[in-house]
Image (spheres, rainbow, N blue to C red):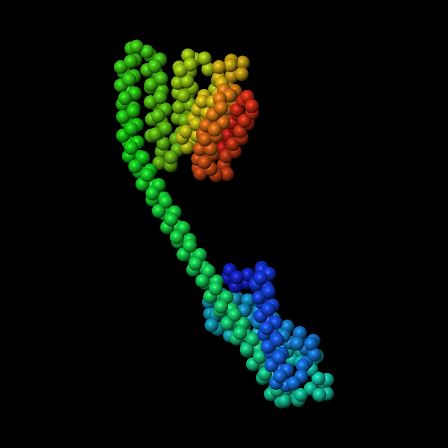
Length: 365
């Protein structure tokens, strides 16, 4: 089993310099206090190497107890049994290492205390020393857990406030959408009825104008109503409205617009979110120059055997100052809808040249 020196969100493997400095300063103060106390009590200093080894062992016990033993033991279901066993093993290893250091660093072997005297003078004090360091380490571990818990509580409260704010924003947007929807329940029907009245009244005077009205009604009705419960429509219905849009613009300009429009593949069973292709088509007529016969606009829509849709358009530009800004709004709206409904399932390539504009959209249906 591999242990990382960490306690919850407190990762000692990534201590910042400031925190590292605090730890070093704390040990310097602690060691200075103990050494000074021994100096004034006993009246002598031990060799510096002894302090390095002994305090090094105590420091190892301190951090191992907090960041390895307790952090690992608390994860067990019966931690109240596991942790005492771990502590007993930990202290046994500590005493063994302490005994080895005493053998190497203490007085020569001929002057080493007898077994009973060693137990009384060294082993019991070493045991209490280990228990003392483990106790201080446990307090340190508990403080860290309290800090982590406090941070998590604060983060949870912050997240709850963010969620409440987002919920309030969603509810406000929903209310606005409901109001807009109720308004749309009146306005479109009123508009459809009015356009139908205009068609029926003026059909005998201008068949072309009446045809434009019918095409416009069909396009508007599709944009408002012709979707299923998932918000999608069949591809052939979307293309039907593209044909209506092209016909509507041809009527407006006395069939003087030149556009090469073609479709192929399975259009009846494939589904797509509405108005994506129609918006890209509208962009051609709104910003393109379609009155040059030898450089006619191109609009090709195909679906291959892998149910992959390819939309390709190309047209000359009108060179109007506001074209780039208006075109950008339409393209951005298309991208937002594609990102929401077809994440990682589409590719949109745009060629915006000085005199021409091209769009190639491929997406998995």
